Structures are given as C-alpha cells and as structure tokens.
Image (cartoon, rainbow, N blue to C red; front, side, top):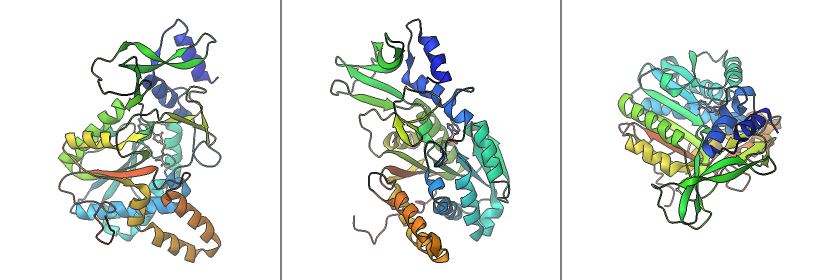
Length: 363
Ligand code: SAH
C-alpha cells in the first residue's frame, strides 16, 4: 500500500469513513502525497497519455482556434489566454507556435497557467522558456488577471473530485471508503440517506455529482458573461447525464482498482457535460456543444494538417497518420467519440470554430 493509503487507513482505524469525494481529493491533491503533487505522470514512461502528448497537431489547432475566437471577440488588446491544468506545457507551446500566423493576436496576448502541482509547473516553465510570450503561473482560477479571456482546458475537469451516491433499499446514500475486517480499504455507503435526492433508480445504481466542478464552472461562466471571452473544454465524458460509477484509476497505462494505491495512480471520473452546461447557462454564459472530439478536430482541419505534415516529413507520415486516427477515430481505443468538446462563452461571442453548423453535412 502507498504512503497515502497507510495514512488514510490510520485515520479510518477507529471505524470511521471518508466520502469518495474526499478520497479522490486526497489521492490527487494531498499536498504531501497527492498524485499530481509529486510527479510527471504523462507519456509512455508514465501512467497515461493525453491528446497534446500524442501529437503537436492538437495544440496547434487549439492555438488557431484561439486566434479565430479573438478575432470574433473584436480583437481585444490585451487578451488573457488562460490554460487550466497545463500538464507538461505541450499544448500551450504548440498553440503559441501556431498562433504566430496571426501576429496581432500574438502581440495582444498574455498567458496565465493555472496549476496546483509544483513539479508540473516547473516542467511547464522549462517547456515555455523560449515561447516568446509573457507567461505567469497561478494556483487557482480566481487569481487569473481580469479582462476578456480565451480559456483552454484539456483533461482538467475529470481531475476534480466527484461525490457518488448509491441506491440502497429505495434510498440514496453517499458512497464512502472504509476499512473491512482484513484492514483493507473498501467502498461502503453512509449510514444516513440523502433526503434531497429522490430520482427513481434500480437498486445498486450510482449517480455522480462533482460539486467542485459545478462551483468552478459557475465561477468561470460568470466571469465570461461579465468580462467577455470564451472557454474550451475537452475531456473524457458523456453528453447526457446518466447513472453509473465512472471512477477509474490508471497506473502505467493499465486500469487498476481505485482504492488500491491512492496517490500512486491517476484517478478520474467522466465529465458530465450536460450538468456542466446547466451550470454555465445558469451563470449567464452561452454553451456550444458538447460534440465529439473527433468531429471538433476535423472541423478545425486536422485531416489537412496531418497531410501537410506528412508531406513535409515523409519518414514520419505513418506516425502522423496513426496519431491523427487516435485523436479523431471513434473506435474503442481511440479518443474521437470517448472525448467531447464543449465551449462556454459570453453570449455576444459568435459560435466558435468547430461548433458552427456545417451546411454541407446532413443532419
Ligand atoms: N492538460 C494537460 C494535463 C491534463 S492532467 C494535458 O492535456 O496533457 C490534469 C492537469 O490538471 C495537471 O496539470 C494537474 O496538475 C492539474 N490540476 C489538477 N487539479 C487541479 C486544480 N484543482 N487546479 C489546477 N490544476 C489542477
């Protein structure tokens, strides 16, 4: 068991429980042992791979997306470009390079990276040293500078903790983590039912609610409604709210039990995009999508970009095509349909690129 696991067991030794939400928060963000706080988790050597780490095309297309959105916002100067949970800084590095084709945008932007993890902030700093743009780091979104903003977030929302509720005996009870007789961490449910949850469901059904994600989305949408701008979210998730336990842990690219080694493996939950859209609208912003990541990237021109890159470096053409297919393909091991894209914007901003109705495409 991991150091964090031992610590959690100690606190539960007298028969107590912690909620799944608290467990997830500790596993990812405990200042001493939290997964993101202690390591670089990405790439083939790490635990999982994200879209910007698969191909430079992903960040480049998002950089061009940002430049187009800036134009449709009336070219504010300055414009805040804010990235949430920037990982290794790869997305921002590729985006800033691609945005050079719109020099006025490059000249108007300043970048804020929102990152809680000290080791990842250091990796981002090194990756962006030569990016040629003013960049600042902040620990929370609330600390980002005011003003019209373009916000990018890839695989950020899925790292925010979720509450889980389980249907037992015709009532909903919050799922918790406790110790069993053998001293192992196991799932259980709270003694007291939840009086305010009354959705009908089969025995054993689970629903997930991320209070942290709702709070965050409300704050972000209210800011965009007041100060202008647009945000783009890409994440593993579903377009329609439903039942199901989506808590999942990955270690060295292999799925492991969520309770086995807290702090040593990545722990995520699928993003409920419909719920996020409700919060964003309630705070006064417009919502575009969600749509499949594959459709979004295709509308931005990933196929053309892949072909151009392949022609320029024929020796890498196979690798570039494989990366393109992994990003847009809709099969089981591909990201095109499992991942969704959703934009949240000030109501005055027109539908951003990728979310515009395509008259050539049959409904
Ligand atoms: N966007 C990157 C990394 C995704 S992993 C990519 O696509 O490769 C999640 C990232 O969010 C990590 O950088 C992690 O440290 C950061 N993170 C997790 N919780 C956070 C929070 N509450 N506030 C800010 N950053 C957070």
